[in-house]
Image 1 (tube, rainbow, N blue to C red):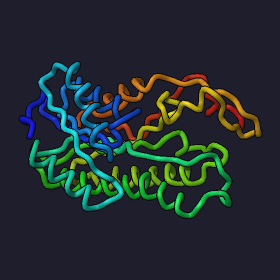
Image 2: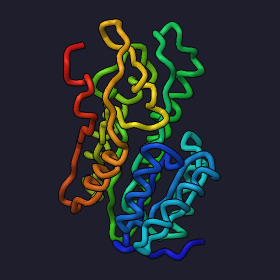
Image 3: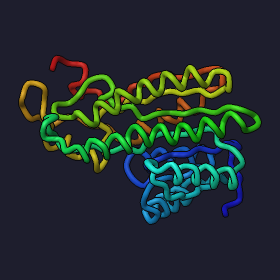
Image 4: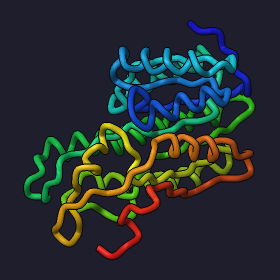
Length: 259
């Protein structure tokens, strides 16, 4: 078990930290002095990500890789037990794990795909937030911050994206309710809505994405580091301030234009 030490004395959990936005954000938090728990389903990827991050962090903070399927309550309970044993508390959770499906109208979406996307994006976010809330309200000093990954799809759908868009709209409801229910316990909750961060999952944006007018078009993208920087900003606020919603997007993506 790693020695629990960090530059700022705080501990963060990042789900989906084996790749993409989660990996970059976890590494950035570590570099900012947070003890950082890299969470995902594939331990080998997490070990690699945490190992790479610790080589460049140079802050004295600890990186811990924990394999966890966020759709399984027992896995999530075990995650928080391990975090509490290693660090004694949790100050930040970035609820980032997510999945999607190929462009399909609703009649082309298999029921099992719907169930899988809901399980990861919505139930997984619920379970991770539930565990964080429970730990944050009973730790001393009480409180902490939960940041949910919403997506631009929490505001407007892409064509043929029923499962993903429905779950991301639901995340907004989860965020608002946690922000309200967390007040008596000094638990803040906010949502980051991300548009066109360049990851392996989003590589198709550079080759062509379906548009609302029926055409296909490439879309501008941004470095995933911009997302990590935004999460760090949200996490850096004092307990009496909260970014409820923050949108970070590629400047020229078509989101704010006519469909």
